[in-house]
Structures are given as C-alpha cells and as structure tokens.
Length: 226
Image 1: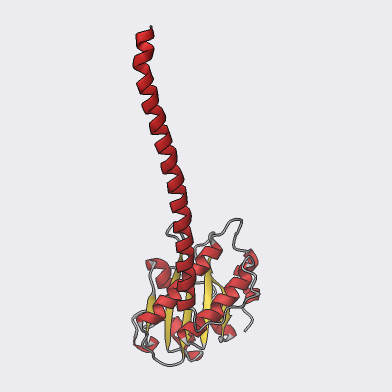
Image 2 (image 1 turned 45 degrees about the vertical axis):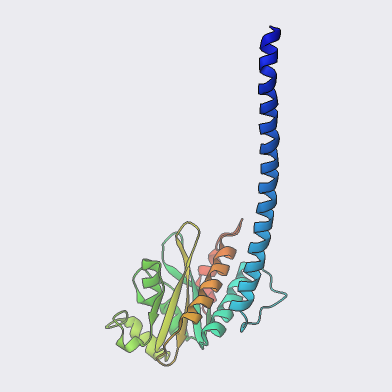
C-alpha cells in the first residue's frame, strides 16, 4: 500500500504542476483578451475619426434612441456622399418589403412610391435582392430603371444618379437600405464607399442592439411628410 502511495505522489505533483501552469495560461489569456479589446477600441475610435472627419457628430445624440440615430445617419450619409437627397429604408419583417424611415429632399409623390419596394425593384430593391451596393451613375442610361415607372418618379424629382448601400446584419440578412441621390450624373470613388460602409456598420450595430425592435410607426406613411 505504501509503495502505491509513493508511486502516486509524483503523479500528484505533476498534476498540480499542470494545473498551476494551466491557471497561469488562463490568466495570461484573460489579460491578452483585455489588451486586445483595448486595442480594438482604439482602432475603432481612430477609424471613426478618419471616416467621419467631414461629419459633425452630435455630442448630445441619444445613441439609445434608434430614431435619433437613423436621423443622424441620414444627415451623415448626405454629408459623406455630398448628396442633396437621400432616404433610409427599413425592411418590414412581415412583408419583406422596404419602407422609408428617414428621408431628405423628396416630394410626396416620390416618398409614397418608394415607401413600398419589393426585392429587385429600383436600385434599393436590387440591393435588397443581391445583398450588395447598387450604383447608378445616370438613371436615364441604366438597365435598372429602363422602361419602369420608377424612372419617371425619379426624373420628376430631378434625380439623375443614385447609390443604395445595404445594411447587413450579423445573420447576413438585410435590415435596410441607405440611399443617396444626386440631381446630375456622377462618378463615385472608393473613398466615398469606405466611409458609407463604415456608417452602415454603425447603423446596423444600433439596429441589432439588445431589446430593439423596429417600431411599427417607423414603417407607416405618417413619416413621409416632405
């Protein structure tokens, strides 16, 4: 019996050593995670400043108030893209269609027409279908709008160019579309898209934060007053 205990003693010592080393590794891993999180936060802040340097961020904005965030995002998109018109549409989970939540610079006719857009319709509907950005540098020469009623609505509001950027959630689903419009044909550079993509991710983070559901009144026509 005593021999068994003597043989087991080195095993216990080795086991204790392994446990101690494992505990040390766990502590090091925790510190590494904290340091990594700190670096990521710093990078996020740096990226924010680089991407939104031309955009005035309201210091008193209610970041927990999604309606305020959407309103701010619409204004930020117009400044980033140097566009006079734009709208932010959200996907109605029940119907899968796009409805306008925020807008700037459009007539009542435009807002009513684009307040119920299905997949594949116009630039925003195409982005909803493809999960990718749609850029139309001249609506009069684009297959996206050729022969459609949407083209007439755009021209009536003096829209000649549009880009639509999807707001893609963590699951891969499209939560909405952020579009900006111009009154003349335009060419866009990669810098513009880098900024608008960062803005889109910011909006998605707010939309997907805990205990948030898209208010039904955000999808209603009473938000369409020009």
